[in-house]
Amino acid sequence: MSIYDIPVMQGYIRMCEDGWNQGWHERNGGNLTYRMTEEEVCQLRPYFRTPGEWVNMGVQADNLCGEYFIATGSGKYFRNVSLAPQDNICILEINETGDSWRIVWGLEKGGRPTSEFPSHFLNHSVRKAATDGKNRVIYHAHPANVIAMTYILPLTDKAFTRALWQSATECPVVFPGGVGVVEWMVPGGAEIALATSKLMAEYDAAVWAHHGLFVSGPDLDTAFGLMHTIEKAAEIFMLVQNSGKPVLQTIFDEDLRAIAKEFGVTLKEEFLD
Ligand code: 2HA
Ligand code: ZN
Image 1 (cartoon, rainbow, N blue to C red):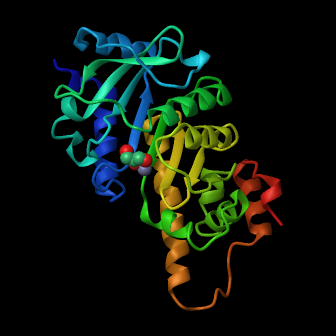
Image 2: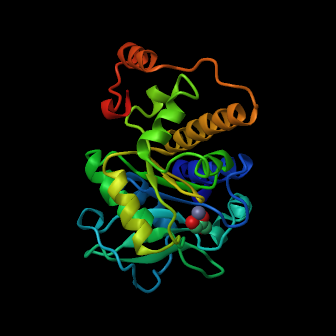
């Protein structure tokens, strides 16, 4: 028995590999954090080492005190995770005041959790509250077509949501609440963390202008699926843009309303004309 026989570790590692295979994680791009269940903590605890020092995060969340996270390492490559998980990802314990982490497993050759951990942490807090504790995953990637869209569309929630909903019929079903958009900001800092977490109170995905996409979900499959669906829609949007042909037809607002009715989802009404 090894830590890699535990399903949550297998799922986490597989998702890193899948993200790399999609081309969303050049070099050290992107990061993934997962908030473990109590049962998973019990399964993984036998593999924990003597913890490292507590490290203050500069952000705090009451609803994440004492939680455990699996996180990618700062400067580590998604491409390498499946080859040597112990050197590229880690398990973090959060302290009882909800403002510091310490490493209890992984990053065996040294390192820290992702530079975006403060962003992830605040977003976990907001999504946990918004979903009655169901949300467990925050995932950030650099999918090319979503990034390309941020150069040619107004950076508004409405413009992006409509463009994505109209680019593939399943989109309004997969993200009926739409997507938020964060204007360009320096990555890794408190400002982008706060701006994103404000949007994530309302949305389960946020576009970072000229940078990438942030998504959340109750489990790894759902979060990966949301990233994949949004990027696929963005790819279709860009293919149409690049075709040089005029748009003759699209999915109109009455079609979006019909999809919502059939699938029993509520679309954000202010995004419809
Ligand atoms: O981890 O993607 O936003 C590298 C990044 C920072
Ligand atoms: Zn990034």
